Amino acid sequence: MESVQRIRYPPFDHTNIDPKSIPITEVILESDSQPPTPFKIGTESGWLVEWRELTENDLNLPRIQSVTTTATLPFLMRTRNGWYIEPDPLHAVARKFIAPTVILLILSLFLHAIAPALGDVPLLSWLTQGSYQIGPLDYPKLLFITFPIFVLPILIRIYANSRDINRQNTYINSPLANPELELTIGDRWVEIAQMNLPEGVQFSAARIQAGIAVPERKTMLKSSNRPEGDQPPPGMSTALPEKRLTGGEEHGTGVGESTPLAVDYSRILLLEPMRVRSSGDLETSNELPIKLNGPEERWPGTIYSSVIALHWEIHLHVLWQGMKLMWVSPIIMPQTENKIVIDNLPLKAARSEDSIE
Image 1: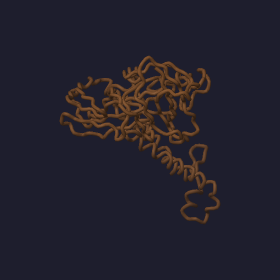
Image 2: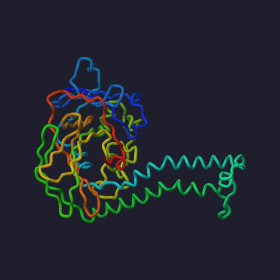
Image 3: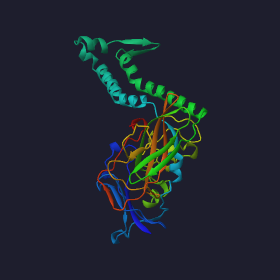
Image 4: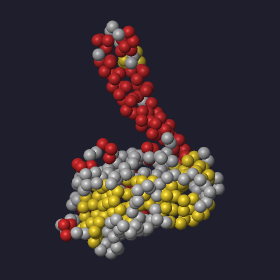
């Protein structure tokens, strides 16, 4: 079966990039399986994910062969299935402090440069004129005030990373068993009929989420006629050494710090957020059955290929030994009968500490 896939997937730092500057990847997908109900998420001038039927105007597009399936792909089972530590909220606090502290440091250096012109200004003249000697060097007086503020975000990140590492080690020393869930999957909703959590785990909330995973690196290279070793497609990095692969880096997209420091373990314990995702409402009631509704806009059902991987999953938020954990598990959502069109591709933060909702 042949169908057409078109995608302009957002890179890691998508907030600073004009989508019009990135070409749309268009391919004819050849598969032994039936394609899904056509859908289009996004616009021609923005970020876009589209899967539709083949037309006569598409015959000159590059052809790729790929499995089309509703079974969760192996890389998603490795990276988005199991217990995950929620990152320390201080990471987000530290990141918000970076811009103001850098501006403060630049301003202090500027004031020091024009210090002779500030001699008649009482407070500024006292701050900018004069220095303190430490060893053989003299340091501007104003720098002793601004530099400690400048390094404050770094110190906060170090403290937050140490807390995250301690939490990960706590889990590694006493790993939790998988929760026992009995799910009923309907049309864009999931009902938790039965739920047995491990001992000592307290339920907080639950939700379901739909999203688009990163396209497969090899397929994107082939579709753009780029050999391995040349400049990769926009949003993807060059291939990384196998010993450094963590999380999404195995796809060749390790172009940003998507998660805080992770402890060496059989799998990463910090969930890398999907850049394109939409969640249903967070349900906090623990009275069974618990019905979880999908996103407000109607999304397509679960479907995977090497270019477009439309993924659904359930999130259970819990408390364990004073820590916030999240159980993530893929769910297979049925296809819709009619074509789905969503005007805006829902972009979210690519860093886990900024994606806590």
